[in-house]
Amino acid sequence: MLAEASAAPDAGTFTPSLSPDQQRELAKKITAFLSQYRHLSDTYRIEFFTEDLWTTLPSSWQAALQDLSYPQVADLLLDVTHGDRSYPTVWPLSLLAFRATAHALAFPRECRQERGGRAGSVKPEERQKNQSQRSLLDHIFRKHVKPKKQYEIDKLGTLVKQLCGLTDCSRVVDVGSGQGHLTRFLSFGLGLSVTAIEADRALVAMASKFDEQLLLALEKQKKNVLSQLPAPQSPPRHVAGWVNPKESWEVFIKQLSTAECFSEDPPTPCGPSKKRLRGSEQHQGCSHDSTDSQDFESPSELQPSKNEPGEQSGPENCCPCVQPVCQEELCPKENRLRDYPDFILTGLHACGDLSATLLRHFVSCPYVRGITSVACCYMKITTEENPNHPGLVEPPTPPTLGRESGPSEFGYPMSSWVRGLSGHQLSYQAREGACHAVEDYVLRLREEGEQLRIHCYRAMLETFIRDKRPDLRRAGIQTIKKAHLLPFTEYAQLGLARVSLPPELPLDPERVETMLKQQGRVVVYSSLALLLAPVVETLVLLDRIIYLQENGVDSQLVALFHPNFSPRNLVLVALKHRE
Image 1 (cartoon, rainbow, N blue to C red):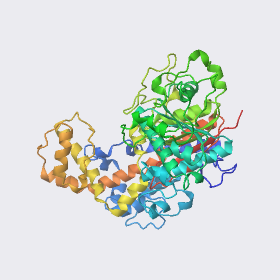
Image 2: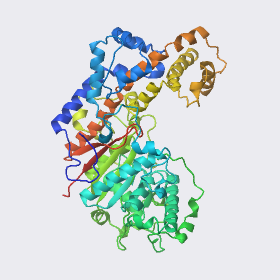
Image 3: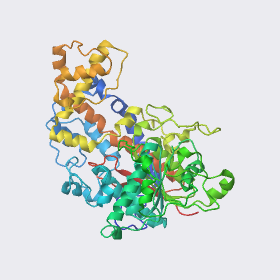
Image 4: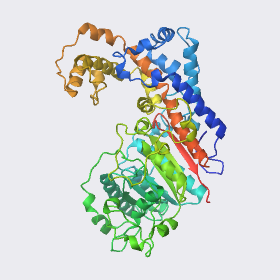
């Protein structure tokens, strides 16, 4: 099921390692296992005291776990690679079976060349050499990009390039492209033709500005840099548009086609141009956080035919640098779709339902030849039980009339097989837990970091909040900076104020001290729940693999990123042959 992307692609690089029957059997085992331990995956750590969660564990588990040190929790419970386990007491067989089953059912997360090391103890080799920058990524592609993102776009960009070679396709669509960091690397660094689509117009404007800065940098460094880079087939195009999960692939192609709309002026020539830079000054003052809103990226820059301009659905969906002048009657839908070029679909950490939507477009759209899907934010996935979960992005315009939501349109489950399994449901909390980084937590445990006390602090605060307001459950309290350095009384004052309760609320000192002594138990209980996180993620990804298989497409999971550096490190890769 998992593979490592090789440096030189070959026909067997992305072949599945589990047969369809094995995939279904694994899904069956996972749903049965998770159903048995819902009392762990579905609980909230902040309710440790209010719901007396420690007593929900078997008494034999309590006795075995209550006195463990933090490094012991890491080695004996969470680290699947730890071989020399020395137990301070005899563990019950049920606890050993729980740990072994959780480890066995989860997809391996280590990169092949880095397997064998201890979880939470290693950063990528290059990261050790260069603590601030991605050394293998050329300087011109590092500007404005944080080290983590540098690492990701280098690895994913190389994988996308491999797929282009395997499919003889040079066009890429980057969905949820944000500020266009991956887009620029694919286009200017790897010579691919790229179209990027992003929901946030401010990020689209920023991406265009960064493109222009890179072009100017290339012009200044022609002798040293330009000769070393492949010539892009065309500069990247950026489309501002929201990818609606309820819409068809034809609508998606129509969105991408707006990138082919030009103003009446001649198209901007490929290559650096000071005139082009001056023409985009409207973006100079735009600023935005570096987070990508729909972290996807779209295929190649699609050059329009003079007789067949792309249809536009409104100026809000076009690149801010140009004004579309397309007319519907000049571009019949059947001609526009029939002549659309093939492309590779990619998305780096596509949030919530966006990953599922892209997989559906990949299956349905004849022009998508391959896909690399890196998912995140599983808690934002829609399910039949939670079709309108907290954080769901609503479309900017009403969905197409006549379309109704069906079981197959939810983000989970996608496959008919998983949908038919008893106990396949995944709660919001289980999916939220699947987004947590096990390897990072193992590192904190081994370092016995003071940050771990925050788990206990928040659970204690929940008790005092409910004492005053029983109806106020799991209230959102934003991060309190350096909270682990504060005594609990100061932390409580800041937290109470954030839920509109009096900061001077009296706290029983004896009660506070009693709860603080249970900090170790809070960490142990959190670790037990965290042990299930990779299993939940495996089920979500396995459901997508089975969905593709049900639609006649084999796929492969690639452990592309080092999990210590990029926790959502599994990339779903699939190719389609031309019909």
